[in-house]
Image (cartoon, rainbow, N blue to C red; front, side, top):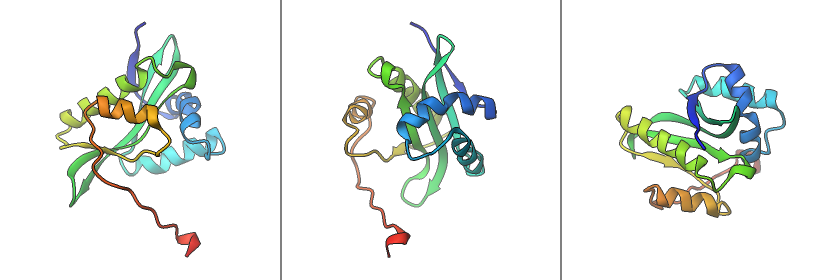
Length: 145
């Protein structure tokens, strides 16, 4: 089967990606909340790319260009997911490859991401795609202080 990867250019495109993002981010209560978060993140150069197959968005990624003392210029991959019924078909890996190509094209030194311990299938994809386990991510919640 063939697919096409597109950049979400407007709110309509982003709304088409909601079913994929809902699987990865179940804490986002509604499609409208998802779109609202996208609008805010656009100011931080966040963009969404999506894989379309047979007229359906089946995988998507959200990422941004970051600059840091630790990494220099890099892509930070916020989100990557494929619809549950289509996982294992290489769709997420195709989107990931697109993001890696974008990092090269944009002159970034690396792609960075955080992932939950329980996402073992995703970890295999990342490792097969050349990623290395190189750090731990820690979180402090201000509401618990």
